[in-house]
Image (tube, rainbow, N blue to C red; front, side, top):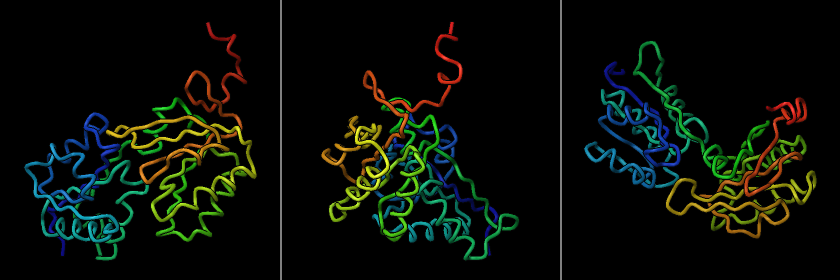
Length: 259
């Protein structure tokens, strides 16, 4: 059924700049014959794929992209399936494996599959504002396209109550404007209005914008689908323009121990 010469590369391109991609991601793109991906993401790496067969598609065609990439790899092609951020975090690795397994693939006899990790949206955003993820954190998408809002609410409640630093993905769209307000309400029921929040738009891209604010004020800022919010925990603070979540070293050892 599967041509053993075919290979599927599940490639993370991080924020999309060649400077923030791993060496292995660059190598894998070079090795691939066919590149499949969301058109916007392919535009970010167009200089790297100019000599490839390119198959781009629109948003909400994720399953079609995965199916196309898997079928091409099974037919003997070396195929790169592109994902922004990390392919295994809200990316294409999960649905690609689902398609493969549904088709009867197994790693012993089928095509080779290589997952190539990359810089996630939350780590890219964190690097622009300081060190907000130094302690326990979680990520929650506010998009209810695939997950019922009732489930998302439970996760928000749990994260807020447990004092996790929380990254909010997909916080708002043109039609979905209420969810970010509900998320704010839930967090305010457990945390101080002064809790630090970083609002980062289009990290490491042309329209990059970074703002530091607090939980009470975060929804007054411009927020869209390219925005990631980092909500601090009860120990997070903003000083000198950077957001920091202490890990506990200074409490345990004290800064006076540093020479």
